[in-house]
Image (cartoon, rainbow, N blue to C red):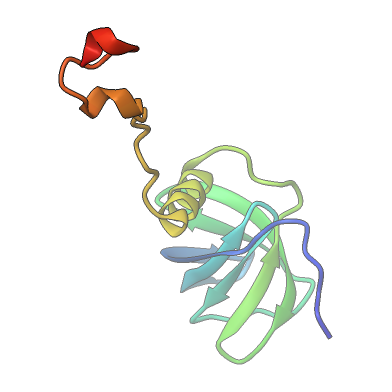
Length: 122
């Protein structure tokens, strides 16, 4: 079964602290999108609300699925700013690779001595 997602998940490696009312767990975000994240290294029960702490900046979420050592978090609102969003954008740009610099093509006559049109250029 293939899940159709509205946002592309980007591979990242971001250390975070996941906090609930009762506990704080260390983990790493291994894939991220504007709508959620997969966190490796910790696990909480599905439907549990939590917050993801990245250097004092908080993003709220709900656990959608959970395995022994990882879980999927869905954000209640799509991210559109903040440090976690900036890391997502940087990873997205890095994944695309370098952007070629535009260099205008030279006209064919530029290689002819004297360059130009007609017989005057010869």
